[in-house]
Image 1 (cartoon, rainbow over the protein chains, first blue to last red):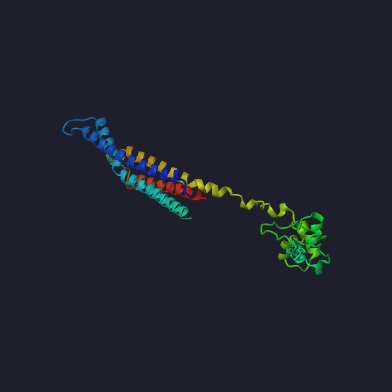
Image 2 (cartoon, rainbow over the protein chains, first blue to last red):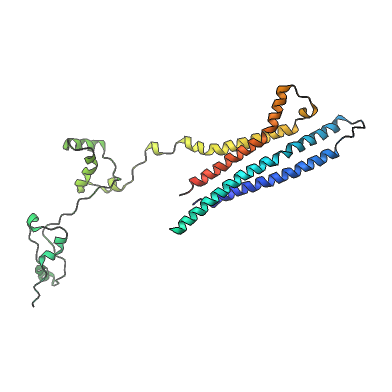
Length: 99
Length: 192
């Protein structure tokens, strides 16, 4: 019979990836808010440092936006592996009970 | 009716294959045992040991040593090759318990070589490398301000930046697939 620790490991991996994806979404929203707050007033003269900070926050926000989808896909892969192992485990247990 | 004893043909010697015509020794009658022990049901001894069935060699018998096989070849030159493995069974007094019951010694070819063991861990290493490269590429893409300011060197660098921006996700998924497959394979291999 397949040891339970493998199923648990894949389940923890999938859950961790989902948690990271949710955290990335929250970070992306936070970066976008900070970028909006740091947006320079273009009607007034602004320093290059102000614009650099705004650009960095904007880029980080847009970079993070596309990441959760991939994280959810990776979590789905790990979750599918966990489900497959759980099914094999249950089949082995049913076979052992039959005999 | 007086009890004149049991028919000698029902003695235990006949159950073990005793044949008076072939062995030529008359088994003692049960009456003799009765006279000796005072008990009619006591075991009766015969002069010669009854012949036992020959020992059949186990299929796990190791092949004979080269010297022994050479002797057998000289003794039985016309014997087929299969008869070599059955030869010790015919002479049951020459079969030693070690040659029949001991498991065969593993050959060097049966030992797990280094290649499969490295291959077993290579999937995990590849997955970790893919995820690490995904994190590195993502970090580079998220901190590079050249594309934002429009200071890209040319079309080639623009394409490179686009590729770099698109790589982290597929690299991450590929790494996770590798690690998941590694865990699944280990789980399947750990089954008895």
